[in-house]
Length: 170
Image (cartoon, rainbow, N blue to C red; front, top):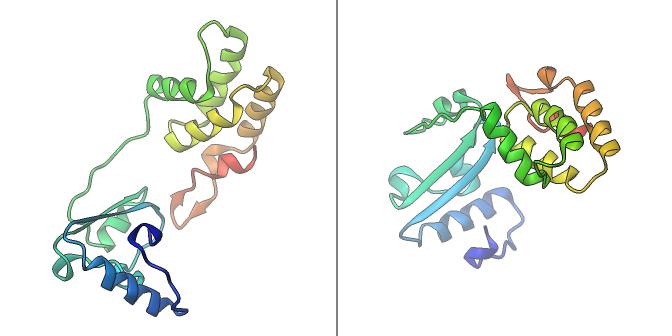
């Protein structure tokens, strides 16, 4: 983001960089800042993002799996998104894995792999792309690894499941 705003951070301190970013962002009339996959409270002022009365033209969009973060950060509006349905997950997975309907042997193991991703788009896309063009043996190996990773007992960050845990084992 800093490069697209023409910023070079020659300031060495965290506070100095935050102040420089703050000053630069305040010169923009309208601005959208996206914070994706937030796992803990973020002090926007501390990192240099103006908001609220400090900059009415700056909108912050954050994505998180933890509603408590929205509460603690006093988010104004919340939009809840569910995991994908079985059909939606399979469609997304097929696209990213490059699967065709006529690949019946491969599709059987691919459906097992997709099911292990439990409807999480990031897992479906990442695993699908990683296995695109691979042999049936590689697909079966990935399926076994995912099953053994016990996705239902993924590592926790705070009280939240980490979608990346299933990807570590591949």
